[in-house]
Image (cartoon, rainbow, N blue to C red; front, side, top):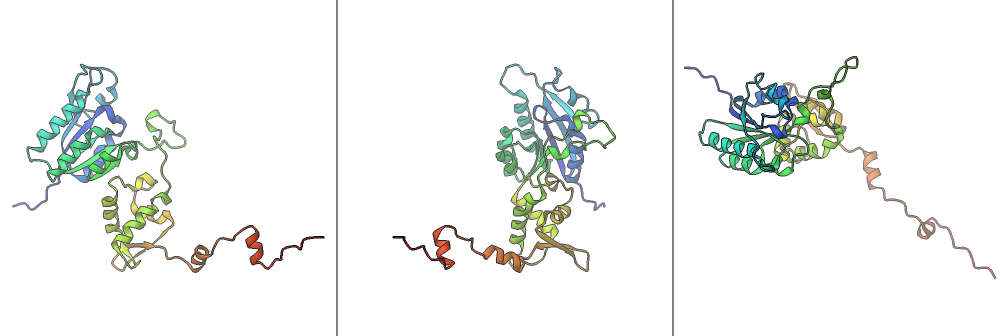
Length: 276
């Protein structure tokens, strides 16, 4: 009898109106790290030219197009069809997780409903995605981090290779990493990097080292400037917040100098005598 553990079975549902076809390759690479994309469906009106870019990559990634004609202006039939399919798939009991690819906050309720059933939801959307949808997911991955790399200096830049957003500086991640470390160790000592990464995902569903320009958490911690790292004899990577030096502590404790007459009085200067 085989004891091989089966990868989590996932249902991938893509909102074509709110996702770019440029992320397709890396989207499924990212999903493969989570589990097996057993169902791959995309929703939109493919009868026109607006979604042609998606139509060109469907066969490459074995995505099944769910055609939804826009009969009425202002009514999104694709969103409704996606929600109906998601609930049908949920009630089959065959899936361990759902991947919702959209930046539309309208799917917040769907994500919350799926999680009520004890099923994980992984969201994929742009950084402009409302917080309500991001927080409704167990994990939220920004699609800007899935765009193709910029071309080499000697290669012409194509439109689909231009970065959609500016990466945040590594220092911007310091408060969140510091909080994760503090929750794992109250004594200010060393903690393993693995649990730190898990705690970061719990604190912020959209935390991703790539948002700060680094593929790995260890690289981000090293470049953030506020932490120290070391490896144990067994090869375990540990991190801690950099201890405050005596000079830094004295600088923070030193009161700011006062200005004006009161400052002059403290320095021993006497007021001039009135003339006459």
